[in-house]
Image (cartoon, rainbow, N blue to C red; front, side, top):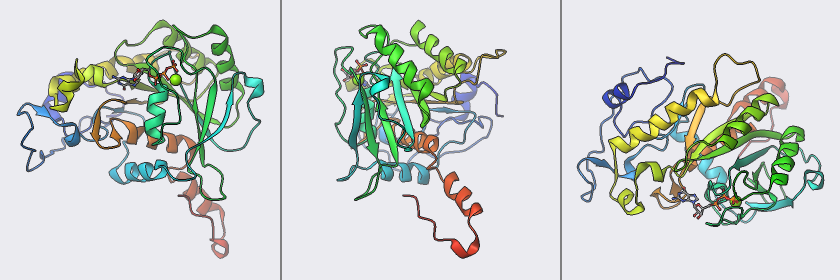
Length: 325
Ligand SMILES: Nc1nc2c(ncn2[C@@H]2O[C@H](COP(=O)(O)OP(=O)(O)OP(=O)(O)O)[C@@H](O)[C@H]2O)c(=O)[nH]1
Ligand SMILES: [Mg+2]
């Protein structure tokens, strides 16, 4: 049922921690736990490596990505000699390079929400500056991904200066100028700190996005902080209760990102993602990263729909269209 808000009871009854929550919450998928749980597994906990890559996300407007799609996204973002690379940095909108035609996605959020750290994991390289001190990123930084030898990047990712505490008001204005005027911007990802929750400035920016019809999607960062108080607790696995706590916080966010009965503009995508730059399922597989990679590709048009459209347009005699990666 597409628009049904799930109840915690329903979830705990129907979904084991091994199954992701998704838009069709009423389906009774029976999932068998892994046959041989690792010997260090706590009986009442799920090891992160046994958790589905989308288990901590909430999809209601979009289909949940399949294993193949996530594998494709991971391959697309795998570091190479030509990807990622810094394309430009700018402190002011008027100094950003003019339209290159390459699709762009921007990462925004209050200072210290973990934008730069997450982007490093997404791009599989430490190209962004991350710091425990709020206000570390001071310019808009653009990174090209998916480039090949002699070829241009397929998508550009932007690490933005944070807004709110520890940032400068002037950056907020520059960011808004960019978001409103940048033609090749495909989606803005707004990161909300899972530890501190939604703040007034987050609500304001969500309202602005609707007002200016800027396509946007919310990511709840630092989900490890919701899952356990200490990092060491996560290593031995996570409890059902902590997984439900994540779902509960996403459930609360849904009416905020898609408010009912308002005509102020198009709301956020009905897909809430979570991430952690601290907890991983296995080496280089940080919580939520694969699904965010897929969301970026979907926003940029590399999710298969572009190829389908191209095939429909070309005549049978000229079907030598270049294959997407
Ligand atoms: N526990 C935890 N800490 C995180 C996570 N992501 C980032 N951090 C920490 O949060 C701090 C801020 O991270 P940054 O990536 O620099 O945050 P930012 O949003 O880019 O910050 P600004 O550039 O100042 O806006 C650093 O100390 C990171 O190590 C996460 O998922 N979990
Ligand atoms: Mg930063």
